[in-house]
View 1 (tube, rainbow, N blue to C red):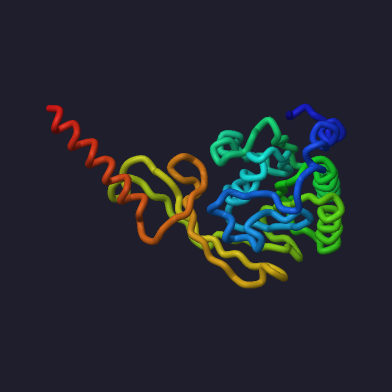
View 2 (tube, helix red, strand yellow):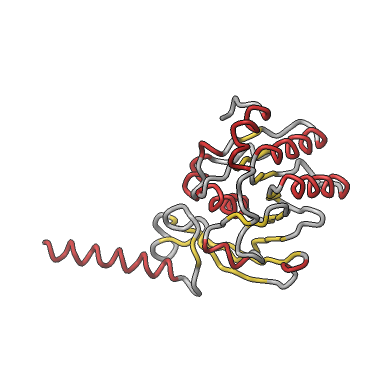
Length: 234
């Protein structure tokens, strides 16, 4: 995928990119954050405080057959993308362009080719650029997921708190990270919503989090059960 040009990508992805419905699915734990419980084609979603959350937003659509792409995220790990549920064979990564103008061009070109574009701006996005790319998303029925601040985003997601959980009182291997997410935006997204997630969860994916430190308690119970079984065997 790394060596594929944008024109070739557009030809390869177009049959899927133009055949979808107005809504693209998301992982079930993320649905409460979005007005339609899904990604609405032609919309822009900004995600602050967590690249993992931005990546997880793509997973449902990717699993359903959509092409997705990322631009400007040099540190993005393909292992993390695969664990959250993204099909790597339909997820080209584009290196960060050297200038804001080329970055905007690359994002627009990718929206011609794929259903969902995950993009990290090189700096602050000017309102004129944001309006132009939002218009491109509407024109191409694509979804733009921006990492960081984005002027006029339809939906704004922000991680307001995060804590890793593991086995025992701070010792042992880290099992998962609990994040608190706040969602708001324009129109149907104006009413604020709050959701707690495991991201990543024990399996590397995303799952809903209940109150308290349930993951730690579950892990301790499994560890105790294992110790009891070993004691019984002895």
